[in-house]
Length: 539
Image 1 (cartoon, rainbow, N blue to C red):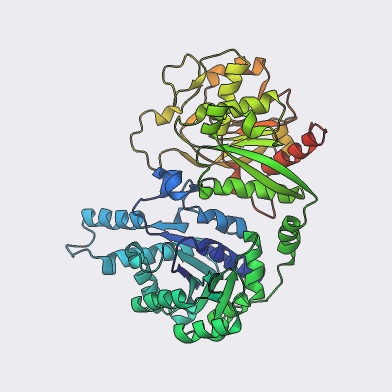
Image 2: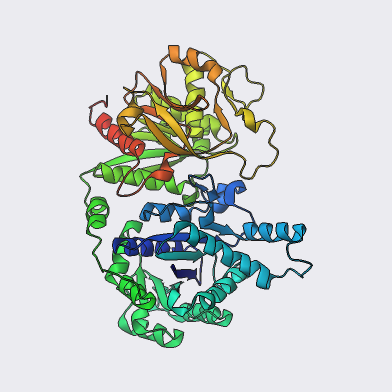
């Protein structure tokens, strides 16, 4: 039977519950245990697929095509667990399931209520995730903050869950804030006390309190929290701010969190130092040999979480190349207004990520042209590939009106067009081309040099594709179609002949990158940027 760790948060949002859950998973895996992590999101959307990135951040996609919360990206980057639609439970999913059964008459005329029907469905979702993965430990992160009305059904469900499985099989870890008031020179424990008080009112007693703080808490502060929150002294753990999220598992291990969890859950646990993680990830970030500046030209630049996996995958590529990464976050609308030179003149590589809608598109096209004309290494992803194709059709193939039918339905040259099966779709949720698809790579190309494999699998999230009607014309002018989906002949990767490194893909490689195993395209992109900037063109 799996054992369970429930992670909750209090005081404020964005405390890092997802990083805490992922770090706990990393520590347990290092001891030889198997883990999976489930995210419970209290929003009523069935999934985040229809949300604006400014509202929710990026949408993370799993191999089975589930559009999920971005925290699943952290879970997958830190651990070896495989994630599916069962690893993300939302209020929308829960209510949809319950109401569907009620309409079928499954409840035999009973009054359907939050307790027990909604809470039972939440518990069933957690059990499904555990049964699918068959692991030693299931970590469950509850989204939101204790006290939020939206989170109450989830908190009630995990209260019941612990009773159902027995106290030796489940513990509660509460992440809270211990602020430092600079003007007074004091650490304040009262917010943590109030947060735990709210949790206890619901009937949940935390076993461990992770205290987010700017610096390590003094002994007396920990003892005060332990006294007023009714936990053991060694169960008050400082979750100190780290320069890199990849240091957090090391910090937790140093604080004795792994030993504490194993004692409470009676797990076979070896406190094995994360030496390989420290050597291959943390130390390389701390002591890089060189520095490089990469521009990310996007539409949602003002929100850090909108391109979370992109930024992390770039960091992984930098780790793989022993360099310090500097990211210039450039709004594509600014390039539309003021031109690319102002924002891109000193960068060594340009990345254009995905997105939807016409806003800022011409700025992305100008950025792609700047990279092509000036021989700057370029990586286009999803919409980034589409804008690169549009730019090449206009600038090289003299198709001045070239565009995507998403932006101009009347264009004479729709080099990017709606996928055939998408044309009759009305509903927006979970109807894109989603999840993992195969791609066959042409040998003697930059894509093949990166992957060193002829057949790969990558994750997708889009409605529009390259229009194969224009393939031969673009080929004649120097575009290489180096990756093709073998089942449907859809273009997956394009690159340019006469360019040091210009590669664009329809899929999202950032979703499969890890700090200790950088995605091949990101590693090669950073490598090319280094070589070109030092005067050595990458072949």
